[in-house]
Length: 148
Image (tube, rainbow, N blue to C red; front, side, top):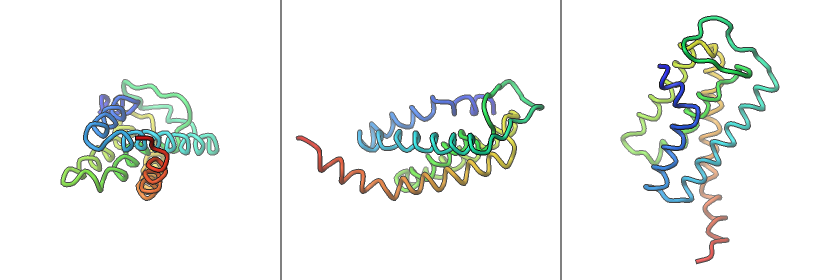
């Protein structure tokens, strides 16, 4: 679980963006990274609002700074699963399993409470789905200003 929780820092999101760039195109990859930035900003805004301290005991090989509620790793994982669900076909369940494992790993390594992970999952699903709904408008805007 420790490698999974560490991979969620930045590496895994860049790998997914690279695959999106290769298989879905530049605009999809850029939009995905923009969506992750928005999720991260919203979650950190919520963290600053609630200022819930992290668990003091039970940390396993991972240290985390800042506030606990909600889990940004979990929000990013569930946002990714929500956003990529329609385009990933039969393998979409892998993104959901990854998101669940990310949330569970944050509890197991002792850097989040269960409520942090649940709130992160809810925020990620809502924001990921909103990003999915707004993607066609983004494409229309980009295509309108595209110079061929």
